[in-house]
Amino acid sequence: MKALIAVLGGDGIGPDVVAQAVRVLGATARHFGHEFELAPALFGGAAIDAHGDGLPPATLDLCKRADGVLLGAIGGPKWSAPDAKARPETALLRLRRELGVYANLRPVAVHPALRDASTIKADVLDGVDLLFVRELTGGIYFGEKRRTATDATDVCTYTVAEIERVTRVAGTLARARRKRVTSIDKSNVLETSRLWRSVVERVIATEFPDIALEHMLVDAAAMHLIRRPREFDVLLTENMFGDILTDEASMLAGSLGVLPSAALGDGSRGLYEPIHGSAPDIAGRGIANPIGTILSAALLLRHSLGLDTEARAIERAVSEALEAGARTADIAGPGVPVMTTGGMGEEILKRLRA
Ligand code: IPM
Ligand code: MN
Image 1 (cartoon, rainbow, N blue to C red):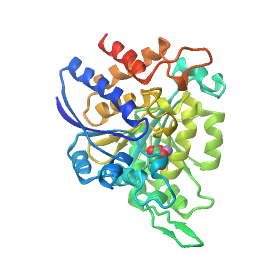
Image 2 (cartoon, rainbow, N blue to C red):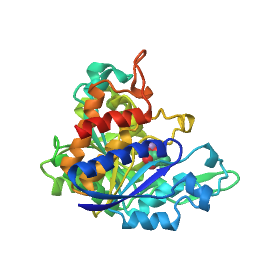
Image 3 (cartoon, protein in one colour):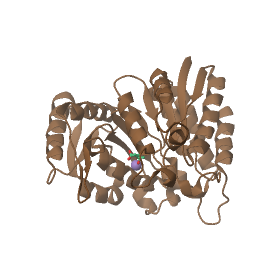
Image 4 (tube, rainbow, N blue to C red):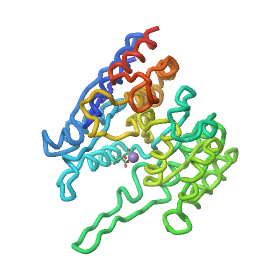
């Protein structure tokens, strides 16, 4: 098949990890006889430096024409002064909104080879297989923001329609898994959470009667995630709770560096990015873990191009590289030889070609 994939390296380690995912996509295309046009564009801080705009019109236009968008990471100290005029993060929020990708899928599975990379006891981790469905284009991230000399306000709003559509995504995905949804909120305090709980309850009861639904307060969820992570299947959250809990959950998998994500809307086009940030502290050193981005490229093939066999081939290659002991610094135990970003890419490519 022919497909146009927008490639946004972004800032910090973003370009490094995306370069490895691009190699993997190229090899996959050759192996399976596809034609992927991989079109790079400036985004985030790099675009602010070049154009004064983190999401220049040409980049947005490319993303809208593309079948899928692969993104590295954005941001860094250079653009994060409290009074900064243009922020890379704002560009990312605009891109998510413009593409209408309201459902952010963040799978967290513990690879047996990385059992000991986690700070959490290994026996708590066996069999952990979670899928976060994070609402991505609403809530406090997008509400009105105000600032005076003496106070600041961030408004959190959710509409019934916004909650309904993301709940349907969670329900549909739960059906193909263990048929359990845990909806996370703070309904003992927040009005938006009370609306969230009642809408989720109704949608699941009427449209997904085969799915077991439980509600959990976000503070308790933060605790249970590391106390008994195996018991969760699909976790449905609003935007900010999902942001926070997925960083926490990444520690189950051993490192932020290995986790991919897919942001989807109503069509097939999606935005795919590792859940880690731009890690300015290690940028340019060639030591970042490219696995989160490579697995995000696999999700792109699966969800936007319908290429499940190809996605599985990439996932298998990653898994085999880990089993063979390939380790970047973030997942290497003490005394274990460490490889570079490119070295890890090579280990994965080798197994993809085999
Ligand atoms: C993420 C990131 C972003 C978010 C930032 C960079 C705006 O932390 O994708 O998890 O908060 O959504
Ligand atoms: Mn985050």
